[in-house]
Image (cartoon, rainbow, N blue to C red):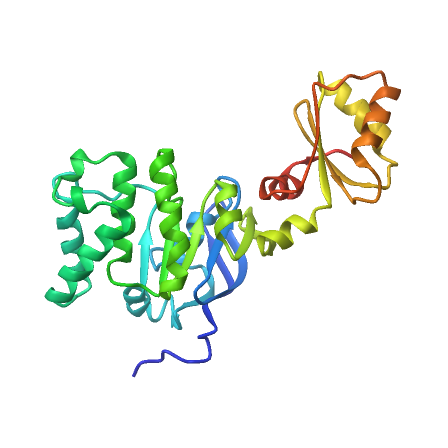
Length: 320
């Protein structure tokens, strides 16, 4: 009997207290997420945060220590085969066999999914066209650039029309031209009935692509929402100050401590990032404080919050 229930259909990925422990470390701890169908979901976080471990559990490559998750309505532990049939997975590392051509890789993938021969041939042409590799389809992967290999991996993940496509750092190590092509393809996939689970350290990509974003650190989600919600949550505007040295940063931070329009200060070397409420002219306030200290900043700017700023807000070194 197929236990593919309709109750989970609004959330095509549902994660409840998912945990993965190793002997010396808990990589993912009590993860809870709900991802809607036909959306792009971005999981961001520093290296070692648990992003790849999360993806490997959801794609059935790694068993959770505790907790549950369903993908396309199937349990990742008890219905692992059905999960694998309904997903595509493009890992961070290139999967190319250099002895095979791009087309041969896709034929092999189609056979693994027991695709009808005629349908497979048609679909291979479609995905090759989609990722821009049709003219190079019969070249061996040995002749492909890093960007072309990544595009081939994405074509392989798309071949069987998965309901959910997991992309782990899809543009890592890819040149600008291929990066833009990859992002363009990802953006179109929800309209074709596909949900995308994306991990990347390029935060501007998530900002442009994702409907929902979660920030992961030490295996736990510390912030989630739409890109705009996350940016709005950290302040109305950001003042960036670059000073001569740490001493100047400490002096500046101390004199700004009582300023009500500054909700948080984060230091990165001789750089100070000020998250403001928007109540006052924050840039003018900072200039006046610096003048009072006889400090001349190397750089001073006022910008709207970005996801990079969200990252700094939650993970940077706060100055008290």
